[in-house]
Figure 1 (cartoon, rainbow, N blue to C red):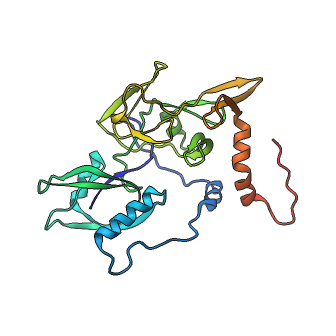
Figure 2 (cartoon, rainbow, N blue to C red; figure 1 turned 120 degrees about the horizontal axis):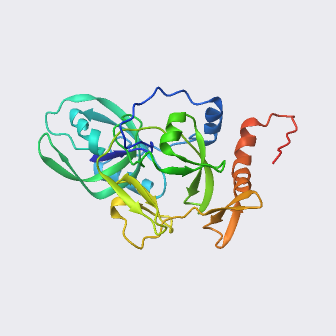
Figure 3 (cartoon, rainbow, N blue to C red; figure 1 turned 120 degrees about the vertical axis):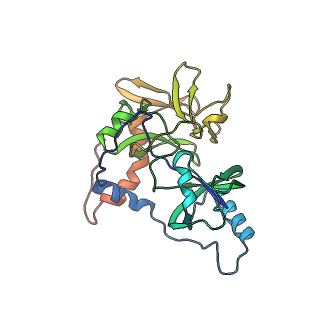
Amino acid sequence: MHNIIWHDHIKNTGPMMLRNLREPPPFCYSFAKNYQAINYVRLDPSGVAKDVLLQSIKDNISKGFPCMFGFTVYNSIQQSSSTGKIPYPCEGEKIDGGHAVMAVRYDDKMSIKNEMCDKETTGALVIRNSWDTEWGQCLAGETRISLLDGREVSIEELALEMKPVWIYSYDTKESKVVPALAFPKYSGYRKDLVRVTLDSGDSIVCTSDHLWLKRDGSYKPAIDLSEGDSLMPLHRTNHHGYEKFYSNKHRNTCITTHWMIVHDLDKRLFQIYTLPAVKTTVVR
């Protein structure tokens, strides 16, 4: 088994210098408490066959359950610095250490060659990683991001601010727009860039493997997009001073942005900040 590594860090395609990152504010730690793992199931008990284990991992991933695992790191991992693809190790390779990651997808048709012994294998796990900064499914720094405060700011500017920002996101299970906290940063350089041109005439530069959310809730790599593919839209408008956005879940309906934020975050924020025996008033 071999793996193709990817992560969600945002990058700039120009020659920029990485700056020291600050520790996230206390709010982020408090907010993260709502997403703690409360239980886990081991997929590899003693004696389980490798093919049975792999199928179990794929079954769980297909049902939306991520799988965490550790693996031995061989020196051929250096090949991933430009492609993000980790090859199956050759016989006699030097061990560089170990690493732990999370598998979120799989690709039975992905082929990866180990340049050290010219051996190619097929089949890969797609994993989230926070180790290297030289690759990733990314957007160009010039890409403008719609923020929940009404602004549209380029990723490059957001990365320089070095602050978390609230953005529009999409819950594929609930089929609705939701607020999300993002941490824009530079994550390296890639040569395999493509330009995606929309029917509005606007275009976005991204890496060839950047996943685009389609109108039907599925994802498709940029390199595989074709004319006529319907991407998930974000149509915003201003009505009497209030920002609204088009709802894909409720067709022909525009939802007020601040209502969406309050409705989605209220229950989580109350869990964090409401103290016992204290009456809390929320002013909207």
